[in-house]
Image (cartoon, rainbow, N blue to C red; front, side):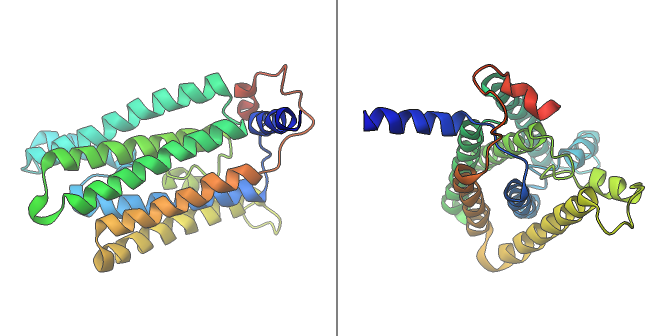
Amino acid sequence: MGQLTLASRLKEHLSAPVLEDVLLEAEMLTLTFATGIEDAVTFPDFHCFVSNQTGNTVMLAIAASGIIPTVITLRYIATSLSMFVLGGCVIGQLGNFIGCRRRGWLILSSFIQTILVFTASYLQFNYTGSNRSQVADLAVITLLAISASGQVAMARSLRMTEITTANATSAYVDTFIDVNLYKFQNRSRNRRFLFLLSLYGGSFTGAFAYLKLGSSLTLLIAAVGKVLVTIAFFFNSEIESLNTSSLNLSAIAYR
């Protein structure tokens, strides 16, 4: 009976929708920091981003036009962009089906993202320098792009629009046009500021760690950050006032 009670409690805990609070903000900011690290590593190695697909979209046209005289760059950019789209579609729709705000889905999604980054770090460690191969490069890009798309899909589904974990352009613009920009209490402005600060911090950490440690160990830092977020999801407060048994949880994030 005690085991059944424990199992039912665990099931209830995992199926509960998480509350938008300071802890959830901190988790999204940690993922933003990891995003900065990953893009700071992949750009010098592969001349493409795994998260910043706005940059990849423009660079795809530049590479295809022949301005950059290398087929490899085009292949890498196209792989990152296509895998990001594919991963975002599959993971995003899975989140809609399961319930994008359910604790269990957040933990599972974050766990998958984390494993992909760890695997990419392993490949970078074993297939760099004289052992480097283009197949391994494409595998690393694929893993990181799918992980990044899953992360962004998860963050966007939570509808914490100021912390997308990836896109800085909208954060800059939304800050500039904020009618309450100079008010003392402005949670949206503060979130955007912290988001940009986290992205800067991750990018600079990734760039300087890359110089000192190399790409594989730097990716490992990002993976560890994602591990912490995955664990932290177990402790998020839940939305207690909602009847989770009769509610379509995929719609909660879109209110």
